[in-house]
Length: 192
Ligand SMILES: [Mg+2]
Image (tube, rainbow, N blue to C red):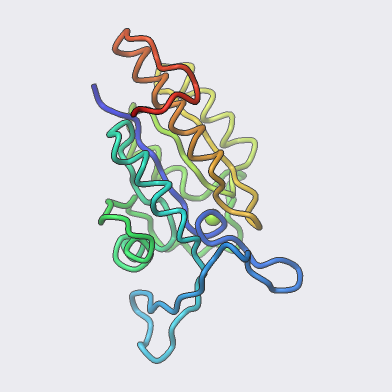
């Protein structure tokens, strides 16, 4: 039984946007990284919540999801961001670098067509801060035709919360239980 994909965005999810005063959350720690193609003497400052690594690993280790980065950081997600959170190298959706001035050039998230190709008919939980109503319709249509799809949309100024990870896990547990015919553990039940 193939576990659902867990598609994970970075900007607005693992790296929340600064608030109106330009401050980043107190939960997050700053790092300087050098993205691919950028000069080593021109690093980019990012901020990450060190709790996110263990939080995500707890779900990944269960094997109930197949984690894949889905971010404009592309392969840098696995080589620069993941290691700062203690995450193992994960695959990424191969996204192009379109010349766009909005995340929704066609009314829906620009990544979606590439995700659609990558997923084929696989179920997926996708965490991104930038979905539109058309994306939610797309998810509902996929679910209706048997490819269960859950979109989770953190507030980009707060980023990923423990509740998002818990909900993704519960959703995957229930999905796998339905597909294997075994009852899902009651919500909130933790393995010893
Ligand atoms: Mg984002």
